[in-house]
Length: 317
Image (cartoon, rainbow, N blue to C red; front, side, top):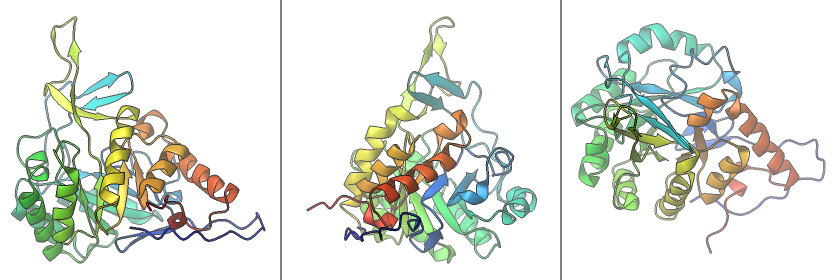
């Protein structure tokens, strides 16, 4: 858990609060990241916002070989969110390092690579390939995608399998390892404890809960894969509850994810025990929302005399 001793800000209101955070050895200039799958490989959104203003970006999930993903339709809008069933379509790790990473190296922000595989060996191979690659600052291990038959949730819902993947990745790299958890489990604390014991430097949560929509005119499921992951404002209370639960049970930093679309949303997660947050679906609605969130959090800290991000959480006792 983070320290909760509050440090008073000097009365000089021109002094800016310290927005930097350390997430399991990954040092960020501020706690706001773009979530994997919502910012491509960075270059896709680079003309729309100043990426260097962010704490970092988590690039689209990468596998050893390119993946075609699930059949269309892959997206369905809901009243308070978005259903997606992309199926982890990606260009593969080699094409990313060759074609995308050189551009990312020019951006003054942290680059976190989200990796995915069907077995411990695949995850370990990806981690070995990334280890020592200039321009990559950390690995987010995706063991929680609900839209694929192999790997993904099949690993993330099993504490032993989740721990095994974590252990294999840790043994293959010296980079900070962040394990991304799924809400589609009976007890998320059990999974969090398993990956922490296996050496995870940090945990990110939540991935998307499973959902479904039906096209009543065509009288068939709206998604080609029938079910998909629900994101957006609808899942924020679920994500916040899980961050709160996990923060009270483990000692490694947490990155909160799920329906964050404003500074007040981000502050709720930081107060629940997260050290940083990822912005996902809201970026698809307003690409600059993460920049707005950074400014909003900074303004809140100044207004309420908080000097550091670590001063924000509510004491639990």
